[in-house]
Image (cartoon, rainbow, N blue to C red):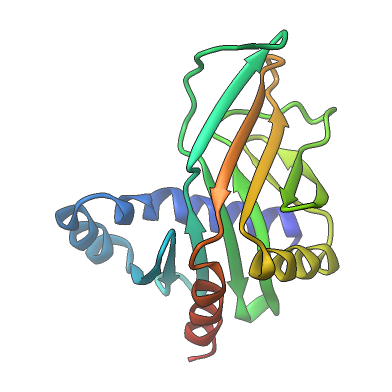
Length: 186
């Protein structure tokens, strides 16, 4: 399976699983319908497992603590869909700790999005509303930086030319990733 297909699957599942970040009644109704289960939470990160399909998918995710949009250097109000920073594992495809971001808008594929983790920057690439790192080696480097880091910032440009900056907390990240990988091996 290609990186883009694997990532799209994880983000689609996470978009649906976002109900798990809302009140408890939505969690149980959603979990019964899709078998996506919020299995744990660690500070600002939640851990999910989807066993509804032919393959198991595990992911940890968070939402931004701050978001800003600028056009022409000025702060603007924009309507965006859900925004998530996601780390996914697909045991059947031997994919571990794949980083992706759902931007909440279609990105300009001619511009290079960047995730900055403390003082380390990683270039990303996009397809529609989703962006991810270029290789499993970059995923590993970024996950290691996230485990040691305090925060991350994703900067990207929409097809309309709006630059967005989303800040994500890394509080609870290491525990969430460790738990996600533990659940994926069960």
